[in-house]
Image (cartoon, rainbow, N blue to C red; front, side):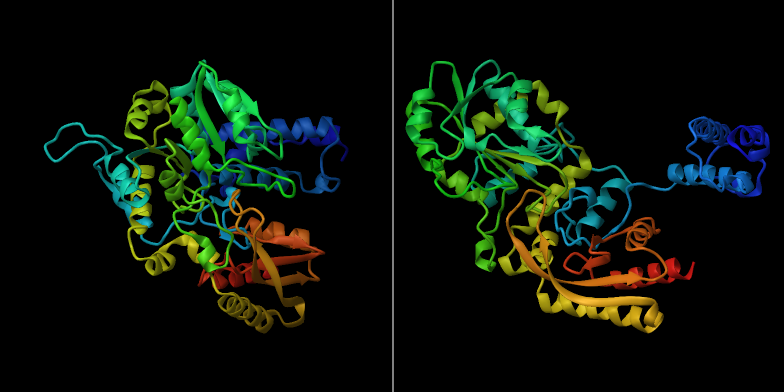
Length: 468
């Protein structure tokens, strides 16, 4: 049938609604919403027919095709989008996969908060309390700051600081630090939204202390340093150390803000990784405010920390924008539990912390995991699968330690039954989505980011995919 004839054979909505397979969903989605879905998919079908966008073999399978698209749409609504997935990409802080995997004990914390009422901002006497109090105490102990709060993310932290301290006034920043990070976050645009006036100093590769000092006017509100989290400028370069900026700020009574981006509470250089700026060092240098992410190297939920001088934190907390950017009970509870890990001895932190554990995961363990799945698949599928365990490299990701590559092992897989692109797509669409990477017509599963026990899920996925 041509497209015009196909349009004449579209079944009525009532007939589709009575199909036994579609009626199976009646306990999960009410009939009126099912009708809406059917009408939507039929409209899309008609539009595709008019535009000659239909599959060529649809003529003999019209009703089956329509039913399949309707059921897929129903499932997409009733099945959770935010669900457990397997990260076989080897990128530890993958934004698309929720960045930091939380430490083991945090799941119970989330359950306890979700299941019943929880204490958010009420004290033992029943009076209204400060929701930031416990997190601020933890930050004081861990970083030696005077006070701290959390907001939605580090972009929100930057926006709130600039709005509260520099609206209508000038903020001095080195040209080499006017960063753009993922999601089109550009520092100059955040400045504009906050109402602060950006005053660039120096050049892209070299900025001197005199550049900052010569830029100071009566309208200067903040001197800001921004860490280049996701890139490096190498060669003929110069940056002004934070200590010198702090001394300059004190000379002119101008607060110095240090935007660390990712931020770290442990010195990773002890373990063979590049040194990421420590939050504690910024406070020790005398920065008036420091902001950093909670869901990257800190390994907590998505949030942004602002720490520093109590007088400035109190001013920020009172700003109307602080309410719009504040975190909910889950983020507060998970953030508290994450920070509590950093009170423990360093060897315990490494064992319990999700992100640090993956960064320092021994290659011997990674290789064992890869060979375990290799044997499972080889025994089950024999020559139907081509399998190779290979040495490769992983990334930390998330704009953190951006130039660092970590040694790893991957299992490279391909099959004669389908292309590697199709295999990767089917793995992503599995009931537990499995995300691997494609390279030279192979699907690569990186075991740095595959947790113990997930090999069994991946093995079952191959049985289901290749068996079907």
